[in-house]
Amino acid sequence: MAKQKGIIPIEGTLGNITFYRSKEGYLIREKGGVSKSRISTDPAFQRTRENGAEFGRAGTSGKLIRTAFREMLLNVSDSKMVSRLTQVLMQVIKADTVSERGLRKVNGPNLIFLKGFDFNVNGKLATTLFAPYSAEINRSSGQLEITIPPFSAANMIAAPAGATHFRLIAGGAAIDFEGNTYDAANTGTTHLPLSGADTAEITLNCTITAASTKPLLLLFGLEFYQMVNDAQYSLKNGAFNCLSVIDISGE
Image (cartoon, rainbow, N blue to C red; front, side, top):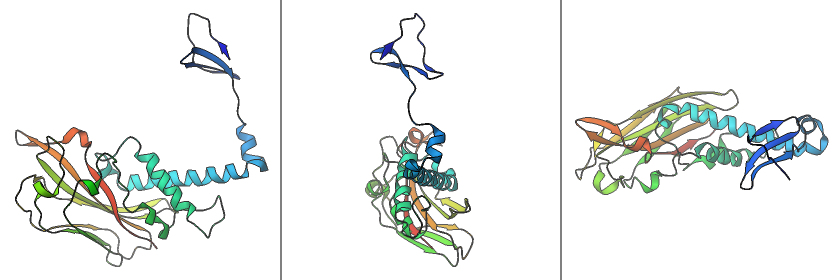
């Protein structure tokens, strides 16, 4: 391994030579690896091409889900959410027992792997909200609904320090992974105090196109706020907010 001795450190690639920084200082090495053209044509790399195609399909599908719920995800995610979602979607793709390897895809029945997925590992729904709730997906009417019986927020929500209020949020979507399109809707409560008094019964209803033949996803979560001078501020930029896939209807 060659070392750089010049007074100006260099990083990057020049021709077949790569300049880079390590614990041992600035080093030089010859660029290696298999060429892109060989990977795309050599029969020896058939499995590599198949794996690459399916990984790309998982990434595209994950982006479609994130786009469908973008408004909700603006304040709910962790730094590794994208890679975690892609990993789960790879499980979905590998569960396809009909398509040939390399052509396997995301289909409705196998989306069950997504159920319980938390978009923020630092704010998981199951360890934040302890109040019971029920979920219902009515494909024929296009109604995706969550019902939460009366509960005491002080007793049934593990709120982070500094939070004074919260919102319950829900989102539903019909997602066409083949056509790369979606039909989505979301809703939420007003800002509710983190007090000991029971709430009224809460119903969150998301309405999408009736009789969709595409996979349906229902998400549920919480957002935390701090009231200062009668204004609500998102607590720590949503670091503790929750959003989870609680129900799925595959086709």
